[in-house]
Amino acid sequence: MQNYKTAFLQLALKYEVLRFGSFTLKSGRISPYFFNLGRIAGGTALRELGHAYADAMLASGVEFDLLFGPAYKGIPLAAAAACALAERGRDVPFSYNRKEAKDHGEGGVLVGAEVRGRRALIVDDVLTAGTALRESYELLRAAGALPVAAITALDRQEVGQNGRGAVAELSEKLNISVISLVTVQDLLEYLQSSGGDEATIAAIRSYQLRYGVTA
Image (cartoon, rainbow, N blue to C red; front, top):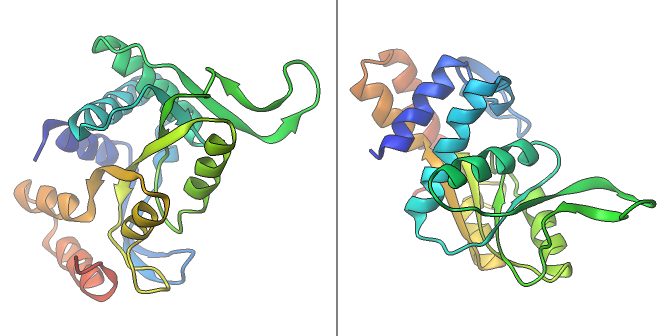
């Protein structure tokens, strides 16, 4: 497992971004784990998270020259990743959107770097139904950017209501790469290698057998 994956999982467990138990998801499914990146709410933790995102971006091989953070959760993620990339010698501009258009000053819904003509990497926390990603994609295209990829912290590797995985469906429909810091399989590998609770591991495996993607 790549170092950034291990570092991110350690960070997620330390700050209880990942919790284990029994959680009812928006889909109605009962999940043995819950993921909430909003638990990262301090400077040190955000810096570490930014480094994990930056390392995953560079490891992906995707060519990009703009980071885009969807409002609201994606905004600090894009900023933190941009800072981490700068420490690695890549000064990448970033932009983000407002939920509502501003009718004074510079106006519009986009803030930050000019997006026109740039290859945009969309930075967000999780991918569920993919609604936010689709909205970001359309917004960037309308502004003259070329969305080339999206990156999220966790791929739950679950099938949706249509029986397909959200990552595969969005990659195909939007013709972009979807990168994740870690997948559920990475989590299982980490828990098993680090002496994690066997009942928790078994519960996650059972959940994935029922709802997980098969390919």
